[in-house]
Amino acid sequence: MTTPQHPEDFLSSMRLRSAREDGIFRVDDQRLGIFEPEAARRVSAANWQRYVMHDRLVDMVRRRRSPEMRWSRIRSAWMTQLHALATAEQHGLLIERMERVLDERAGQDADTDLTLLMQDVALRSLLPVALAGLSDGEADLVRRDLEMKLARLVSPAPGGVLHHLRHVAVQVRAGLVVRRVLRQRARGRRGREADLADPFVDLLPELGMDRALDVVTTVLTAIGGPPGTAAASVLYEFVRQPTWRRRLEAELAAVDPVEFRTAPTQAAPVTHRFVKEVLRMWSPPLLLVRRSTFGFDLGTTRLEPGQWYLLSPHLIHRDERVWKQPDVFDPDRFLPGAPHGPADRNCYVPFGWAPKKCIGANIAVVQLMALCHLFCTRYRLTVDRPEAVTMALRFAPVPENFRGRLELR
Image (cartoon, rainbow, N blue to C red; front, side):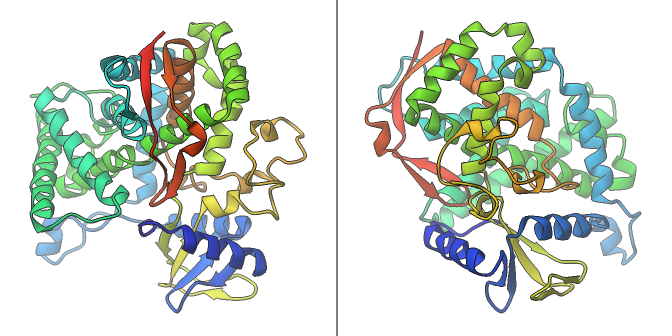
């Protein structure tokens, strides 16, 4: 669960209260805000340890328990697969998919919606990482489902009943695509793929198809929103920070392409700091809503079992108790020993808290750095009056009125 639409005032109120009440306070009768870095880490870690999947549908119908499947085991399978995908070859394929989408749009429209373009680039390039080997029709259907889910989060006005019914129909059909892919891979009628869905083909007897579908849908949903908003935020700062843009252009023009694809954070440290600072200031989502499994003594108050609580990397990243000048964009705060850098590692959590940290953190950084590389070396972007572009705070930070012209260099 994430924030309601347009929560600027709500977030401002939470930030003021967090400063006054040391980061832990009751938001209302139902929810506790936990915005103190160490408390957020501790509560998040403990609640994750025994988080298990629901029973299989067939077992619920028969009123029996399914074999226990912990989410930690699901996460382990994902991490093993992601490690295999963290190669120069796979990074190169990701970048090539980004290029194909951008090449299609380059030179076409002098008034391109750059926020929507970044969503398209992120989704199309990441879909084969989540679920590969789809036909064009299958991929279009899955993307349409994810785009409709995102539109419901981004749009300030909900659609009508007919729109909702259309989305339900698309969602059902997209679910059938995932079921078909898993079933056909299990039966040898479709080739196995190096994607985040494939490990669960072998686990189908334990998981059951409904739980396997939930696992794959979780990954698909994850690539359908936050990566695109993060990419749009990178581009937002790219056009609004001319000094930093020139520093990126100088670094990336000189970097060896093979070294960049092999280890981008080492090959382009300035670009890495730039991306880290964008994620500090504009990390999605803005708020996370969780339900506690355990009770916690948090000093001034207590989190009871079953109680809802709020977490927010955004508020931690803007906390003046742990960051100096938190509202100033300055990637050099991530230089070793910088006095205005993070107080400790619990203060920089754009991908959440271990052990539940986003599994896609590393590939997300690669993608965002690759985006910087492309806009510094392959494409030219023109935005009239970049200072007039605004950042709306919805389920995530979303640049508004962000339009421009994209051209090949």
